[in-house]
Length: 223
Ligand SMILES: Cc1cc2nc3c(=O)[nH]c(=O)nc-3n(C[C@H](O)[C@H](O)[C@H](O)COP(=O)(O)O)c2cc1C
Image 1: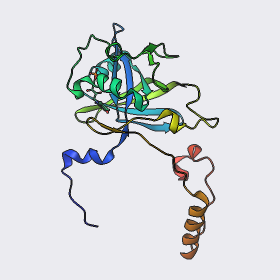
Image 2 (image 1 turned 45 degrees about the horizontal axis):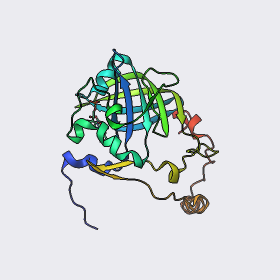
Image 3 (image 1 turned 180 degrees about the vertical axis):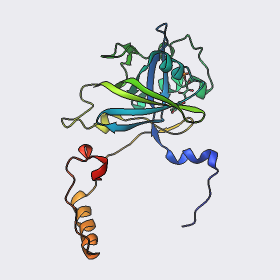
Image 4 (image 1 turned 30 degrees about the vertical axis):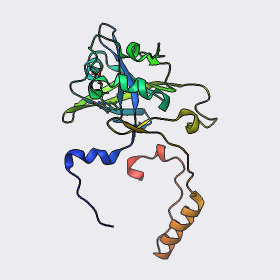
């Protein structure tokens, strides 16, 4: 299979699709702002932390710098239209800073449990964050947030706190204006793969290491 070189300014396209989250923040006067962000990822599970990468010109980063808090709301694909409305500047229909995008989009705000910016009731998941630090990483600021409260719509997670994908139908952006949503969940055949890996290690005369039960609790030095 031959490979083609991708121009560097389009390299992030290979990191798609990515979930479109709806981030809510407030300015110091309390005006609510909502904008979609796909550059969001979990970076630590103990403590629970995530990062968010925000273009320097957006109201969201000004609010986060002013107030030090934000909420990552997780929408389903049926909210595509509303998400696109909230992506106003990127989408090409800018909404002035003093206007609450939730009202234009017809989305409902509800109080958060621990932070001042509201949750978006229509979304199925909510991560309330306190800012740890903000770093200049280029034309974006990288924000590290401590997750101080998390909540979800009843029925969207199963008894093991695993997302019920055919109910939540998360929305993922492929590239500007094009979205997808997962249709199914496939389970990896863990035991067959484990036996295959252990067999290959044995063939090479390598001792099979003990299974890691609680990898979250591992210290860096043990890895
Ligand atoms: C699906 C989607 C994902 C986006 N992801 C990001 C992102 O990760 N980082 C970013 O800076 N802007 C992102 N944007 C653009 C902002 O959401 C958009 O420009 C918004 O108007 C900024 O609003 P604000 O100025 O009120 O903060 C995204 C837009 C959409 C529609």
